[in-house]
Image 1: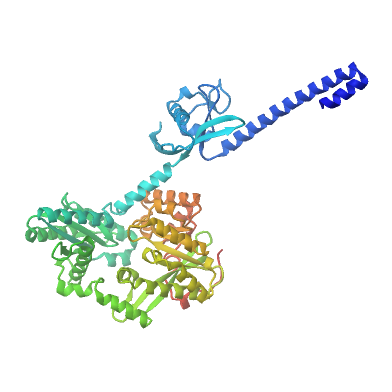
Image 2: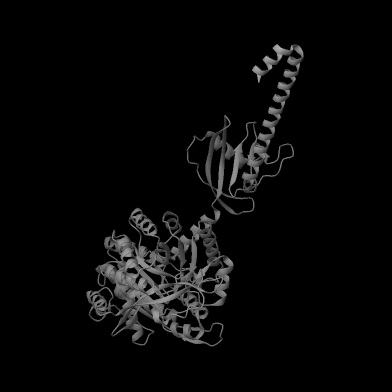
Amino acid sequence: MWAEARVLIAAHGMPVLIAATITLVCAGVLMVLYNIRTMTGLKRDARTVLGALSDGIVILSEKPDRAYCNEVARQMLGLAPERDLPADYYSISSSHLLAELCAGAAAARRGEEMPPIELVDAAGRFRSWRQSLIHASVAGSTVIGVVLHDRTEIHTLSHLLEESRRRDPLTGLATLEMLHDRTGQAIETAARIRTGVALMVLEVDQFEAIFEERGWAAASELLIQAALSVSVSVRAMDMMARVGQNRFAIVLTSMRDTAAAIPAAAERYLAAMRLTFTGASGVPVAVTGSIGIARAGMDGSTSLRLLERATYACARARAEGGDRFHYYESDGDLDQSPMDKGLAAEIRQGLEKGRFTMRYQPIVSLRTSAAVGYEALLRWRHPIRGEVLPGEFIPVAERSGLIHALGDFALRQACLDASRWPPAMQVSINMSVVELMESAAPHRIIAALAAAELAPHRVRVEITETARIADLGRLRHAVDQIRALGVTVALDDFGTGHSSLSHLQSLSFDSLKIDHRFVKDLATPRTASMIRMLIAYARQIGVMVVAEGVETEEQASQLAAMGCTHAQGWLFGRPMLADELPGWATVAG
């Protein structure tokens, strides 16, 4: 532009020089105005974006004692608008918390991890925030601040899940895991100080009859009443836990004279279980209990072995008419133990003779009540015992190495059956952590899919945690390999055993299944609150939620209102053989 101006001046003299100067001045003014307008627009757009974020944003201003806070941050910090400052700007010295945040951000180095913030706000509510440092160069200036991510609900949910791991939500008693921990400690202590330890298993004799006649609401009320009655007579040094639907256990510790202490305690607990149960029906029922006893040293040296043997002794007490206790007897009860070698041989024989079958329970959309798939459930048709549930033979199969043969059968049969279903139907297949930790697991899945000519996306592998995972990295690799095939993966029985939010966060699951015991306790405000937060968190990270054990319309409606999208349970259908499945009138997507 200046070169063109010099040519005009040389040709036409001073008038052109004045005109050129005015033109350049105007152009400069226009450029300044344009830049100001552009920067104003960018700032306006930036504020719009920051204001729409779900996280709190705090940015230090170039001017002293001033910081920008978006609306979320303002609410989190409890700031009030200040008339003397531009919109969304606040005086740092006006808030002790804001001052701490800004001081921490200014002192931190780029890439440094900021500590979490936990506090009780002005309304008395607990709050947990994660801080992330903002340290960037923008248009030649350094921008410093923090991002505040509200983790209060996740923190609360994690706490509730940890509490549910330790405390049974129905009765408030300790859980099976806590019992095993306590019993293990007691056995170690007893070996040092030479005292006795015993494990008692208690069952309510009339539970099944009341459950069948009056339903779960009455049965759960009975369990609560029995637990309360017995627990008040348990010594402070001992522990009572709920270890099954209708099963309690008490570990007796620090006994000097076991011959006198054990029967005295058993009689005390039997007396506590002799009660009259009325419930909502108003019809009184006389209730009694049965107790099985296993003694450390004599009947086993581990908590698991003691529990198994006390359970079988309890079954013997019930078989003899109930309202009594029975010691474990190695001659009479050992043959019935699911841990013996005979059962492993029977499992192997059952596989050879085709005595294992698959049953399928529908998984439905709560929005349409239409089936979207089926969970494949392994059953054993024993020639003497009748139909045996997996809980009785899977532990033996895992210990004996037969789990892989059982798993292969279930995987192949489920894929073959699903190949005859409509294309939108998915089959969910259970695999234990023991199976998945084997390097051949993905290849076994590929072989089953190929044999059935079934598309990978129609299979969901459900993983159940029955023990602590020693090598989480190895399991993560296995899960990633399976998902790379196009197969989806679900975390089964979430909230029980060792399943936790940490595993949901560290492993790439596509869905999770809420354990049936939480659904049964849905009427409890604490359980309902936990499920509501869990569903909200799952939706936030893009994980589908399936509620197990739905038995009533009320439960289904409540779960749907919480945002749960899928469910399974007797309300929608019992487990059926493949040829018993209903016609395909509708297929949900």
